[in-house]
Every structure is written in C-alpha cells, then in structure tokens.
Length: 192
Image 1 (cartoon, rainbow, N blue to C red):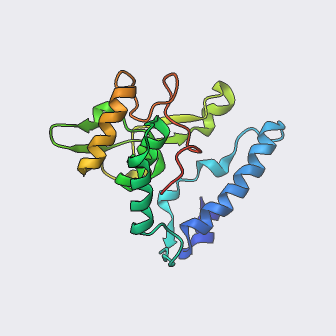
Image 2 (tube, rainbow, N blue to C red; image 1 turned 120 degrees about the vertical axis):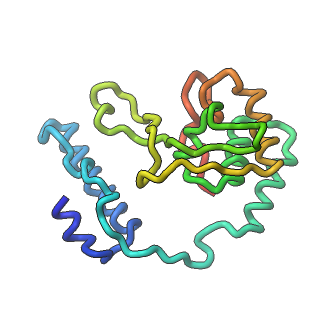
C-alpha cells in the first residue's frame, strides 16, 4: 500500500495509468504464484479506493458519439432475431453503466411498474478463490469504489429490451443470462 501511495502521491497519475501498471504487475505475480515461487499475490490486495488519482481527461474520438450510439441501437432494434447478446448490447447502451454492473443485473433489480432498475452490485474477478475453486467471477454485493446503489429511470426502449429478455431469461437469476445459470461473458458485451 505504501509503495502504491508513493507512485500515485496526491494525484500524480491517472487511474487508467495506475491500472495498466497494476495489470502488468499482477500478471507477473500471478505467474510466480502458478509456478509455486510465491504463496500470495500482495499486489491484488491493494485497495485502489484508498489512493488518489489525477483526473481523467476525455479526448474527442475516444468514445462513441451519441449519433454512433443511436445508429447502433437502431440497427439492433431493426434486427429480426432477438438474442440475449444483441439485447445485452442494447441494454448496455441504454443504461450507460459499467459492464460489470450491467452483467450483474438480476430480475429483482428491475421494477416494471416504476420503469426503473437499481444498480447495487457488479460482476468482478475473484482472484483469491480462482486457484482453489476455479471460479473466476463473483457477483459482488457492492459497486466499484463503494458507491451507493443507483436507481436508473428507463426509457421505453430499455423497457422493451428488458421485456424481450424476460421472455428469454425470465426464469433465470440474471437479466443477461447465458446458458446455464451464469451471466454473459464480459468479452461478448463490449462497453459502448
């Protein structure tokens, strides 16, 4: 923790730069862990929410424009075949939330009467139990950076997408359920 604080200081680097550096460090330590050279990856235990980062700056062209997002939504809306994957991309685009938050949505989070969703948990990688159980993802009951749950008002199109998903996955736990009882893969639902 002290080493990470010395790197980030009082906001010397952005979270994105810190995250990239930690990813490299974690890959090195994970390899050492797999080889039996070390017993624990201490780098994964650093709570990032206790560090200070430089504010991110948005540069033109890095994100989808509203026009591009609307074109994608129109294309998916016009699509004849409604599948969990295309509906998941549509829902993600409508909500504008983190991928892990969208993937963790359950039917209990959806209130069709009020046309709202509550974001209160997220899918995250569970590195500690990965080695013993092989399970790589867990549904965490808190949000990134310990934010409070958010109630999201839904557009008519988002409600329509959710109702299509209910026809497909209404008897399963997750709104964006794949085969079995798992949520869709993060690779399938690229952030919009």
